[in-house]
Length: 441
Image (tube, rainbow, N blue to C red):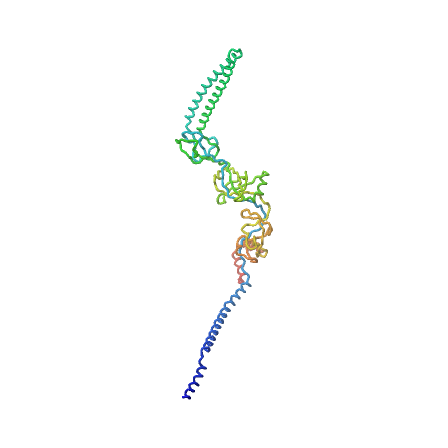
């Protein structure tokens, strides 16, 4: 029993020593994982090498190979005049806009104008029934005749009383009273005459005429209506068209350049363009500045007058006003299309003598349409890029198609053969082509 037990114990001991197989399995798994990861990394590096090496080789070849010239448009820096212009949005404002209203009450009998008609000052516009005022005039004329008779009688009595008073035949008081009676009748006669003149004026008011020269608008009331002085609608609106003005605001910063010229009597020209700022409508001059600056906008209003001979400017029309402040003469000018703006500031692409471009920072002056004044950075005769500059880089080679075409057009004349071959001879052209190809017969 003891022996069996001992054998069992001896057999159990090795089993206990071989029991932990787990660490060995983990080590084998870890080794396999490391080997797998290593293979994956090796494969990735191999693939990367095959991808990077050709790309690097291509990049080096591209860097080593010169890029083809970029076709661009060019312009030469010249000398010219630049206008200093202040642009503003303006409104056409008539010098006079009159609403024709009645000055008396009465029935409107006749309208003597056509809607939209051009009328002159004093032209007939409308007629109001004058008969009530003519009757009042006749009544006051009768009253005047009556009072004039009383005045004449009082004056005769005054002469008689004066003689009697000198002879002391009547009381002095009676003579003096007659003097005052004559003065009263004289006042009554003046009152009657004033009433007659008033009715004559009313009869004159019955005939309405144009107060200004201009264009009549739409009719606001029809014949047959009873018009009154309390009616604010009026009969029509007459707007003066010649001359006409444009009111537009300018920044207060431009006043130091404008006010001294106006005080000196200089004429500042103003051009009025249509809403699209394309068509020139009229040309006028500044006639007045407003008396104060608008603090909300920092601008001051300017009134310019235009003769408007062809009625191109219409009241309340929106226009683009261009005020010519001064003109710079004989300054270096650059096309506006050549100007670039970026990190260097304001610059252009300058075309060098070796047909490469370089970034040239410049300082600009005023701009006048397609041209701008150059204060510094460019000289007369320099060539700049005006088209295709968005694809350029500093040092890049360029080619100007127009200049190349001109050079090619001059090349045949310079290389003309001395023996007088005709340029249009097909045999000579074929022989020349064969010689260039190395296969001449």
